[in-house]
Length: 297
Ligand code: C2E
Ligand code: MG
Ligand code: MG
Ligand code: MG
Image 1 (cartoon, rainbow, N blue to C red):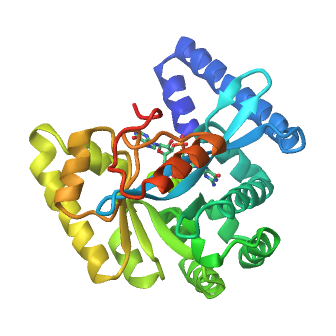
Image 2 (image 1 turned 180 degrees about the horizontal axis):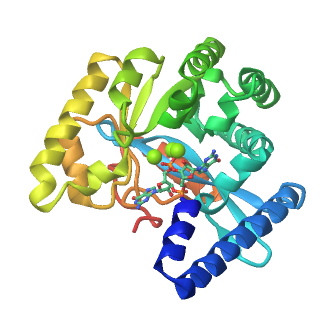
């Protein structure tokens, strides 16, 4: 798109052209800076993980957590993944970063009650190298985590890039015993056909569908969510709704029997200590109703 933007800017006149060129330059410089800093960030221990609780809607208990990476940049401060994952992917640094994330996340989960799962997001770049299965096997060995407690979240980009090798790798991952979930379900072009072909254990419904649970979009949203849940049930997949921000959204999901829910209303991404305290408290009263905790919005 950069070329098109420049072309259009040129066509629009010289002043605009200079403006766009300056903006492009700035963007290139930003990326370069991020790239340089990223190379040092792992060594300097600037990454950290947050854990967002996942809840079982029916049983009203914590069922696990999703690990989300953050970067404490010495100058920019706390930096979110949307700002650096794509640069990490382009430079290949995402592999080392992901090894770090996987190891930290699995290690943390070994301290939790055995029924809790840990989910980790994978990048499509990781599927383009031959060693993903070996890397996951190694992390399970090193941390001693039971493979069935690790869920790897995969987005459509993985299948889009090279569908045949993606299938082969996913089958290899399933042989290790890990769970696979389709993240951001419903946002891509072929979510449905991918469910048919690939060995997923779970569906994570994109939060845009949950955001539609109000006003004039509500009845359509309910219909769509109900059909995704029905599909998940028919295919024996766990269905998780992402981005629950209100009590009424949670009630709607309970009424259509969604399996699991995740979102700010139930629990924000939080430090490992906070998450450990949450599950310790909930474990003492196993039947504690889902209620917004101290980390809720
Ligand atoms: P994702 O996998 O879809 O993760 C869920 C995102 O939604 C997270 O954003 C989370 O903080 C946010 N979220 C959770 N509850 C709510 C809510 O109620 N409302 C709203 N508006 N947002 C909510 P985050 O942490 O900024 O991460 C963004 C994306 O970056 C993730 O999307 C994931 O694809 C990617 N990512 C995060 N950590 C990693 C990682 O370790 N490796 C890789 N490859 N990607 C990662
Ligand atoms: Mg995810
Ligand atoms: Mg994701
Ligand atoms: Mg998602």
